[in-house]
Length: 459
Image (tube, rainbow, N blue to C red; front, side, top):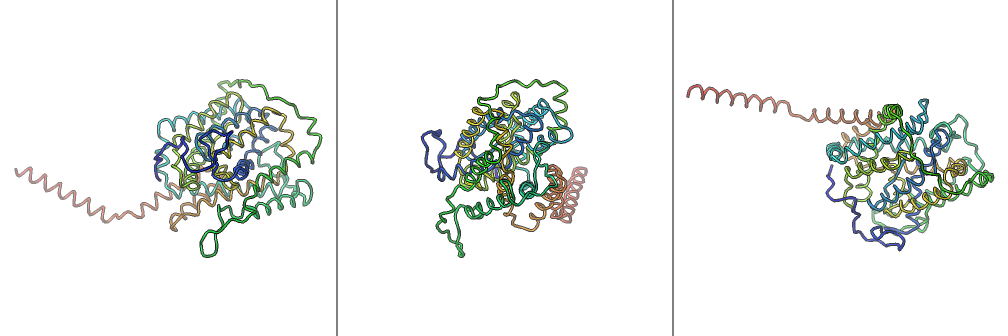
């Protein structure tokens, strides 16, 4: 892989239009509506996880909204691309499983992951890992994550969900055909997004390969319209949620973490999260950003790693959900129109307003959001991420990628798939070694050494 040649925290000077209320170094690459559509592109992943943790583990949603808004604003300003801020999925999965981590233990896991990533980034080890990793293995991780999102999205659409137990707790009850969260509504949202955005290309291409003018429907901010419809349906489905709203932000409190909390959080939450954070939150994000934004300087893995570490060292002490960057979130925001840091800055403004106005009571609104619509949004994010793996040029590269992805999916472990991909890649490289030539060269060297020793003895 290519090294990070330029400082990624200083966005490029590329062309673009500037809005007066945005920082001077954030320029729109497309329209405001397109960036607004991209802003909600990763909420299909974000909402189910934070909603499940708020309901089942008593995570403070207001605090999480405020801190993730600050993270979004900082990453949009510093990276200049729609860099996502996503909950750490493995920690969330453990917290919602039978282990059922408490809030201090969840925060301990986040702090432990943050410490490791901060160390890897600050020492430059993360950049070394990025340079050494074979591209087919990275593509395998991306493919497995994308397909995993797509499979989860289909479950969201087909079956009723119970987020009070898990962010992916599909029940055996099929989603009703009609209704305000029915199958017809989800399919209508799916068809609308396809008609508006097509396959997600920036421009339509004619049969002879030449670009042509985009259709007028391609300018529609499909994801924003679908998400706004979902918010309206929250109040239609249960008008009484207005009575449960409380105005004002949640008070900030330091989370009391004991040594026992840290030990449990580290072993139960941080250990399974670390491989996913390194692979998907840093390595895959950097590679995907270079694919989606080839005109920009490649992101530095070290700086992305430090970014994740600093975010959690700030927010976890106050009870904000441990977060990272994610390739799926970046793919989703790009898929729905995000092309610059303005996209996540708009998202930050929305999160901050909701966190300050409604605080933790906003969970009553999210609890009524149509899950089928979230599934449709998540489906497009997953497909966009999986399609990044389409550049494998040889059968051997595709073989490594598919083995890595298959093991990751069937074993439910990105780390297991990664190890399998690395071992397979090394075995294939061993097959390319010309052992006969090596043996001949070794024998020739031995003979020369023996002749030199004999000449020395004669002398």
